[in-house]
Image 1: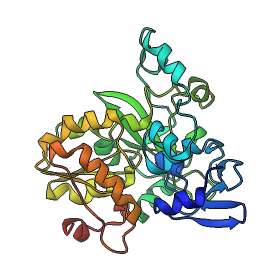
Image 2: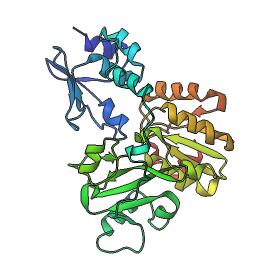
Image 3: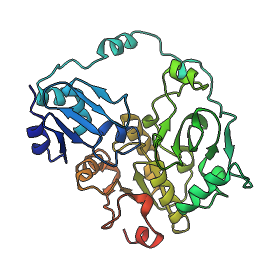
Length: 328
């Protein structure tokens, strides 16, 4: 049986104990989905009964290899060597079949995504839009420029109700979006458009062209940016904070929607980063994020990307002030 306590200690992963039979950690799958776990919501059975997240019921399983991979951000083979689990990654047979099948059109339909009618632009305030405008004001953002400059919307109806929407465009096509709830409790923080046709149909949407972490936020705009400095962040509100505060100082930003770059995102970063004189990775403030930041820095080292750390007592870039940003 895999010794979870020894593994967590050896890899310096913060954990606690909810009982004699369960250890608790930050859920790595919530973080990968762009909704970082604020506490220890992932429970791991020390008796080999599996693991599950109390925040998101889909984040559960029995494979120690899968959880080790998520916690360390390593390959399946590396995780299997650590956990002693199955060296064959689930779904490999499907991926092999796809190599010999004709490529399917994006989102399975060959059609560009269309913006749902419920997504409303930030225009003149009214009684319905006021809670969204108030939420943004509480976070230090004015509403007037958000749709035009940053492709943001608000939604008060349907499956995306109660959320601020960040649309994701790639090569002038709408490919996905993610919505951040404005309510403090009782809702999943971020909800992103799924690639699964059945789940998308249940939500009244076409499926995303690809997982959202295959894209960079504001990729098209950044290809034309005249800023001298760019920051690569985890979440959309982190990137928005830096882009807004840094706009008059020649600073721009993007986000990965998670804490590590996918191969597709690395390719896109190689496409846009050369136009910026200064390039930085700025992840959340926990000490355990430093190895992830350094690994990304290594992946992007040919482009001269450096890691930055947040000031003391600042947990994520969304909390920065203009003065603190300029002092990084």
